[in-house]
Amino acid sequence: DDSPDPRLSQEGTVQAMDELNVFLEYYPNSQYRPEVEKMMDILMEKLAYKALLNCRLYYDLGNYMGNNYESCIITANNALNDFPISKYRVDFAFMILKARFTYAQESIEAKQVERFRRVMDEYYSFTTDFPESDYQKEAKRMFEYARKVVEGK
Image 1 (cartoon, rainbow, N blue to C red):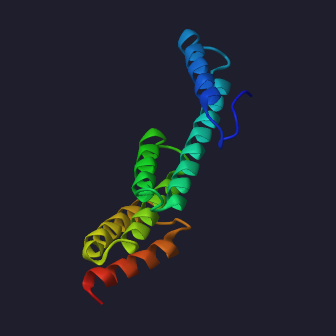
Image 2: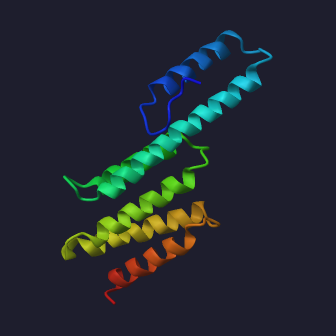
Image 3: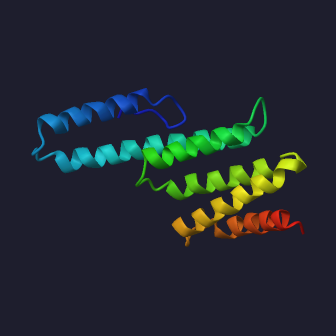
């Protein structure tokens, strides 16, 4: 239980996971294996949640001292790769779409069409991967806005 709150450094969480992995390597047939695997899943979700908090922070920082929307996108993409079965996958995917959308909105006019095309591409990926998401309504709104910009309406 040395694993800290997700908003803090996760050094203890990573160390605990390393130690649990060592246990599983030494005792692969242990009666405690299911319990250890459950602990590993809980710790992995904590790391995924930490990544989601980082994504949200980058998004909230926006263009403050640089393009934090791009940092949000990179962090979310990395999290999707690092935590492929996380319950936060839909949140990471939506943060990518939302960051692309806001970045396109705040771009200079000369770059908006190109960036809104990327929003549309991201929308298609999002709806393909998460057709039943609670974010669908907001995602559709972003898509429609992007489509109007791209089509010049």
